[in-house]
Image 1 (cartoon, rainbow, N blue to C red):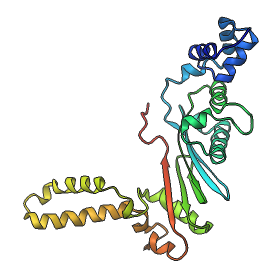
Image 2 (image 1 turned 90 degrees about the horizontal axis):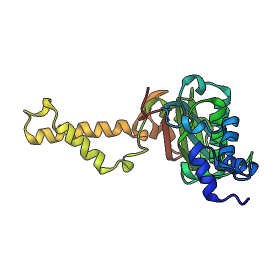
Image 3 (image 1 turned 90 degrees about the vertical axis):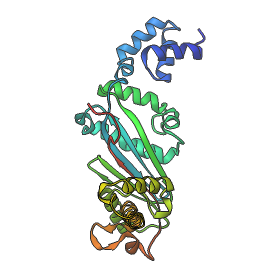
Image 4 (image 1 turned 60 degrees about the vertical axis):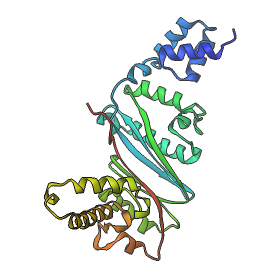
Length: 273
Protein backbone atom coordinates (compact mmCIF):
# COMPACT_ATOMS: atom_id res chain seq x y z
CA UNK A 1 0.00 0.00 0.00
CA UNK A 2 1.20 3.50 -0.84
CA UNK A 3 1.73 5.49 2.39
CA UNK A 4 0.72 9.08 1.63
CA UNK A 5 1.88 12.29 3.31
CA UNK A 6 -1.73 12.83 4.49
CA UNK A 7 -1.71 9.45 6.27
CA UNK A 8 1.57 10.29 7.98
CA UNK A 9 0.17 13.68 9.05
CA UNK A 10 -2.99 12.07 10.44
CA UNK A 11 -0.98 9.61 12.52
CA UNK A 12 1.32 12.38 13.77
CA UNK A 13 -1.71 14.50 14.78
CA UNK A 14 -3.18 11.56 16.70
CA UNK A 15 -0.01 10.44 18.48
CA UNK A 16 2.50 13.29 18.47
CA UNK A 17 5.10 10.95 17.00
CA UNK A 18 7.83 12.24 14.71
CA UNK A 19 7.46 12.08 10.95
CA UNK A 20 9.86 9.17 10.36
CA UNK A 21 8.44 7.14 13.28
CA UNK A 22 4.90 7.64 11.98
CA UNK A 23 5.85 6.60 8.44
CA UNK A 24 7.73 3.50 9.65
CA UNK A 25 4.75 2.40 11.76
CA UNK A 26 2.35 2.80 8.82
CA UNK A 27 4.65 0.88 6.47
CA UNK A 28 4.98 -1.91 9.05
CA UNK A 29 1.19 -2.45 9.23
CA UNK A 30 0.41 -1.70 5.57
CA UNK A 31 -1.38 1.58 6.33
CA UNK A 32 -3.66 0.36 9.16
CA UNK A 33 -4.08 3.52 11.29
CA UNK A 34 -5.20 1.78 14.50
CA UNK A 35 -2.40 -0.79 14.41
CA UNK A 36 0.14 1.95 13.68
CA UNK A 37 -1.06 3.86 16.75
CA UNK A 38 -0.71 0.69 18.81
CA UNK A 39 2.88 0.20 17.61
CA UNK A 40 3.78 3.76 18.56
CA UNK A 41 2.17 3.39 21.98
CA UNK A 42 4.13 0.19 22.57
CA UNK A 43 7.35 2.01 21.73
CA UNK A 44 6.40 4.85 24.06
CA UNK A 45 6.58 7.35 21.22
CA UNK A 46 2.87 8.21 21.23
CA UNK A 47 3.10 9.47 24.81
CA UNK A 48 5.41 12.32 23.82
CA UNK A 49 2.60 14.55 22.58
CA UNK A 50 0.74 14.35 25.91
CA UNK A 51 3.83 15.64 27.66
CA UNK A 52 4.10 18.68 25.37
CA UNK A 53 1.32 20.56 27.20
CA UNK A 54 3.21 20.63 30.49
CA UNK A 55 5.27 23.50 31.85
CA UNK A 56 8.98 23.17 31.08
CA UNK A 57 10.98 25.95 32.75
CA UNK A 58 13.89 23.90 34.09
CA UNK A 59 16.64 22.57 31.87
CA UNK A 60 20.11 23.53 30.82
CA UNK A 61 22.11 26.11 28.87
CA UNK A 62 24.96 24.51 26.93
CA UNK A 63 27.50 25.59 24.32
CA UNK A 64 30.05 24.41 21.79
CA UNK A 65 33.05 26.29 20.41
CA UNK A 66 35.37 25.30 17.56
CA UNK A 67 38.16 27.16 15.77
CA UNK A 68 35.70 28.57 13.23
CA UNK A 69 32.44 29.21 15.15
CA UNK A 70 30.51 28.82 18.39
CA UNK A 71 26.93 28.08 19.43
CA UNK A 72 24.86 28.22 22.61
CA UNK A 73 21.44 26.68 23.24
CA UNK A 74 18.80 26.63 25.97
CA UNK A 75 16.92 23.33 26.25
CA UNK A 76 14.06 23.15 28.74
CA UNK A 77 12.58 20.24 30.68
CA UNK A 78 10.09 19.99 33.56
CA UNK A 79 12.24 19.18 36.60
CA UNK A 80 15.68 19.99 37.95
CA UNK A 81 16.12 16.25 38.54
CA UNK A 82 16.07 15.55 34.80
CA UNK A 83 18.20 18.64 34.07
CA UNK A 84 20.99 17.15 36.22
CA UNK A 85 20.72 13.74 34.52
CA UNK A 86 23.80 12.74 32.48
CA UNK A 87 21.57 11.70 29.56
CA UNK A 88 20.00 15.18 29.43
CA UNK A 89 23.40 16.86 29.72
CA UNK A 90 24.65 14.80 26.77
CA UNK A 91 21.54 15.79 24.80
CA UNK A 92 22.09 19.54 25.32
CA UNK A 93 25.82 19.27 24.54
CA UNK A 94 25.04 17.44 21.29
CA UNK A 95 22.43 20.02 20.32
CA UNK A 96 24.90 22.88 20.81
CA UNK A 97 27.42 21.05 18.62
CA UNK A 98 24.84 20.27 15.91
CA UNK A 99 23.73 23.93 15.83
CA UNK A 100 27.36 24.97 15.31
CA UNK A 101 27.73 22.41 12.51
CA UNK A 102 24.36 22.88 10.76
CA UNK A 103 23.98 26.67 11.14
CA UNK A 104 20.14 26.61 11.10
CA UNK A 105 18.15 29.83 10.66
CA UNK A 106 15.68 29.15 13.47
CA UNK A 107 14.63 26.64 16.12
CA UNK A 108 12.03 25.28 13.66
CA UNK A 109 14.67 24.85 10.95
CA UNK A 110 16.96 23.12 13.44
CA UNK A 111 14.27 20.65 14.52
CA UNK A 112 13.45 19.89 10.87
CA UNK A 113 17.11 19.21 9.98
CA UNK A 114 18.81 15.82 9.97
CA UNK A 115 21.12 14.79 12.80
CA UNK A 116 24.64 14.36 11.35
CA UNK A 117 25.29 11.38 13.65
CA UNK A 118 22.13 9.25 13.69
CA UNK A 119 20.59 10.33 10.37
CA UNK A 120 17.19 11.00 11.98
CA UNK A 121 15.19 14.23 11.79
CA UNK A 122 16.15 16.04 15.00
CA UNK A 123 12.52 16.57 16.03
CA UNK A 124 11.90 12.81 15.73
CA UNK A 125 15.01 12.00 17.75
CA UNK A 126 13.85 14.48 20.40
CA UNK A 127 10.41 12.81 20.58
CA UNK A 128 12.15 9.49 21.26
CA UNK A 129 14.15 11.16 24.03
CA UNK A 130 10.94 12.57 25.55
CA UNK A 131 9.47 9.06 25.57
CA UNK A 132 12.53 7.58 27.29
CA UNK A 133 13.10 10.39 29.82
CA UNK A 134 9.40 10.89 30.55
CA UNK A 135 9.28 14.69 30.51
CA UNK A 136 8.47 17.46 28.08
CA UNK A 137 11.67 18.73 26.43
CA UNK A 138 11.80 21.84 24.26
CA UNK A 139 14.55 23.65 22.42
CA UNK A 140 13.78 27.23 23.42
CA UNK A 141 16.45 29.34 21.71
CA UNK A 142 19.98 29.36 20.38
CA UNK A 143 22.66 31.72 19.09
CA UNK A 144 25.58 31.06 16.77
CA UNK A 145 28.61 33.20 15.89
CA UNK A 146 31.16 32.78 13.12
CA UNK A 147 34.85 33.38 13.82
CA UNK A 148 36.62 33.80 17.16
CA UNK A 149 34.29 32.73 19.96
CA UNK A 150 34.53 31.88 23.65
CA UNK A 151 31.99 30.60 26.12
CA UNK A 152 31.28 30.23 29.83
CA UNK A 153 28.51 28.11 31.34
CA UNK A 154 27.74 28.44 35.06
CA UNK A 155 26.13 25.26 36.42
CA UNK A 156 23.98 25.00 33.28
CA UNK A 157 21.94 27.97 34.56
CA UNK A 158 23.76 30.95 33.03
CA UNK A 159 25.49 30.85 29.68
CA UNK A 160 27.62 33.34 27.75
CA UNK A 161 28.80 33.23 24.15
CA UNK A 162 31.30 35.91 23.09
CA UNK A 163 32.37 36.88 19.56
CA UNK A 164 35.57 38.91 18.95
CA UNK A 165 37.73 39.96 16.02
CA UNK A 166 40.66 37.76 17.06
CA UNK A 167 41.47 34.98 19.50
CA UNK A 168 42.89 35.66 22.96
CA UNK A 169 41.63 32.76 25.05
CA UNK A 170 42.57 34.00 28.51
CA UNK A 171 41.20 37.49 27.93
CA UNK A 172 38.04 36.19 26.23
CA UNK A 173 37.39 33.81 29.12
CA UNK A 174 37.72 36.69 31.59
CA UNK A 175 35.20 38.73 29.58
CA UNK A 176 32.78 35.78 29.51
CA UNK A 177 33.02 35.48 33.30
CA UNK A 178 32.39 39.21 33.61
CA UNK A 179 29.31 39.07 31.36
CA UNK A 180 27.89 36.15 33.36
CA UNK A 181 28.36 38.12 36.59
CA UNK A 182 27.46 41.67 35.52
CA UNK A 183 24.72 40.97 32.92
CA UNK A 184 25.33 43.82 30.45
CA UNK A 185 22.69 44.31 27.75
CA UNK A 186 24.73 46.02 25.03
CA UNK A 187 28.35 46.09 23.87
CA UNK A 188 28.46 49.90 23.59
CA UNK A 189 26.30 53.04 23.62
CA UNK A 190 25.89 52.86 19.84
CA UNK A 191 23.79 49.70 20.24
CA UNK A 192 21.23 51.25 22.62
CA UNK A 193 17.94 52.02 20.83
CA UNK A 194 16.70 55.60 21.26
CA UNK A 195 13.41 54.18 22.52
CA UNK A 196 15.23 52.70 25.56
CA UNK A 197 16.81 56.08 26.39
CA UNK A 198 13.49 57.87 25.92
CA UNK A 199 11.68 55.45 28.21
CA UNK A 200 14.27 55.75 30.99
CA UNK A 201 14.17 59.56 30.62
CA UNK A 202 10.36 59.52 30.98
CA UNK A 203 10.57 57.36 34.13
CA UNK A 204 13.25 59.53 35.74
CA UNK A 205 11.34 62.74 34.90
CA UNK A 206 8.34 61.39 36.82
CA UNK A 207 10.19 60.56 40.04
CA UNK A 208 8.90 62.31 43.14
CA UNK A 209 12.22 63.68 44.37
CA UNK A 210 12.51 65.87 41.25
CA UNK A 211 9.02 67.35 41.07
CA UNK A 212 9.85 70.52 43.03
CA UNK A 213 13.05 71.22 41.09
CA UNK A 214 13.07 73.92 38.38
CA UNK A 215 12.58 72.35 34.95
CA UNK A 216 16.08 73.27 33.65
CA UNK A 217 17.77 71.72 36.69
CA UNK A 218 15.48 68.71 36.56
CA UNK A 219 16.49 68.11 32.94
CA UNK A 220 20.19 68.12 33.80
CA UNK A 221 19.71 65.78 36.77
CA UNK A 222 17.67 63.37 34.63
CA UNK A 223 20.28 63.48 31.86
CA UNK A 224 22.97 62.54 34.39
CA UNK A 225 20.91 59.72 35.86
CA UNK A 226 20.04 58.25 32.45
CA UNK A 227 23.67 58.54 31.38
CA UNK A 228 24.68 56.51 34.47
CA UNK A 229 21.99 53.90 33.79
CA UNK A 230 23.13 53.45 30.19
CA UNK A 231 26.77 53.11 31.29
CA UNK A 232 25.75 50.31 33.66
CA UNK A 233 24.14 48.42 30.78
CA UNK A 234 27.06 48.71 28.35
CA UNK A 235 29.74 46.03 28.54
CA UNK A 236 32.61 48.34 27.50
CA UNK A 237 31.78 50.87 30.23
CA UNK A 238 31.35 48.40 33.10
CA UNK A 239 34.12 48.07 35.71
CA UNK A 240 35.87 44.72 35.20
CA UNK A 241 34.76 42.29 37.95
CA UNK A 242 38.32 41.10 38.63
CA UNK A 243 39.71 44.66 38.74
CA UNK A 244 37.06 47.39 39.25
CA UNK A 245 39.71 50.09 38.71
CA UNK A 246 39.55 49.49 34.96
CA UNK A 247 36.63 49.21 32.56
CA UNK A 248 36.23 46.44 30.00
CA UNK A 249 37.15 48.98 27.30
CA UNK A 250 40.46 49.64 29.08
CA UNK A 251 41.01 45.90 29.62
CA UNK A 252 40.78 45.04 25.90
CA UNK A 253 42.39 48.16 24.45
CA UNK A 254 44.87 47.23 21.71
CA UNK A 255 44.21 43.51 22.21
CA UNK A 256 40.86 42.71 20.62
CA UNK A 257 37.46 44.11 19.62
CA UNK A 258 34.21 42.73 20.98
CA UNK A 259 31.84 42.17 18.05
CA UNK A 260 28.89 40.66 19.93
CA UNK A 261 27.84 38.64 22.96
CA UNK A 262 24.79 36.75 24.17
CA UNK A 263 23.91 35.94 27.78
CA UNK A 264 21.22 33.37 28.57
CA UNK A 265 19.71 32.86 32.00
CA UNK A 266 17.83 29.58 32.24
CA UNK A 267 14.05 29.97 32.22
CA UNK A 268 14.03 33.79 32.19
CA UNK A 269 10.55 34.95 31.18
CA UNK A 270 9.04 31.45 31.28
CA UNK A 271 6.04 30.47 33.35
CA UNK A 272 7.05 28.58 36.49
CA UNK A 273 5.13 26.00 38.47
